[in-house]
Image (cartoon, rainbow, N blue to C red; front, side):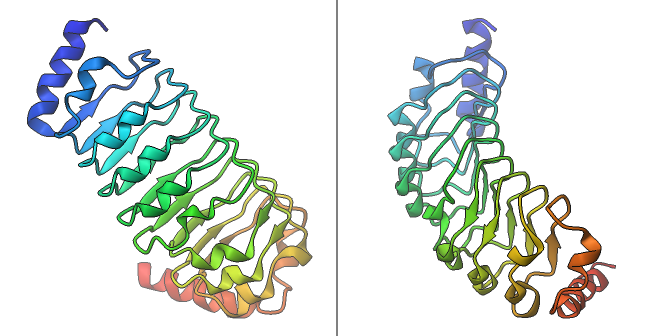
Length: 238
């Protein structure tokens, strides 16, 4: 798409506060985009060729939704922490290895998608964010869910398709966690904390594709207690 096409996008964005520049083969911020920093509430830069986001992203302080999925990012700039109104952050399908600590300031975050990246250490930066409902870390390189996850306030945590072999039993203490997805990891049956079954709010625990049969899971102490929660939630839905 030529400059004239982009120009039309910018004119529309000035009126709507929404700019979608996906699939434009962009590898750096277009100069004209910077002028929209005081106006944009939604910015979609997905399916381009960005290897890095410029520090100027921190100037877009009205942003509520930022989508930068399907690029070639290896990290995120510290200045993202300046986007105080951000509610949705989608960085799926990049090559991100670590998350800047500045994201701990984003108190309005509701949904974060970091699936299909190269994150090895659980990003504890999201602990303490009380409005964060969904954190998707599927298809990364996580091997352990550490004790400090008790600070997560999410209702859904997706850890499918990692290499997780160890889960802290303190996950049971997460105050709002109802859906925990751990499919296709490296869990032994003995690695499933019984506290999660007996003493948590988790009503959907997805464990298919680990190093045990699901019928073995059904024999665990506390499974009946978990199934009571599962069934109660299912009844509410229908």
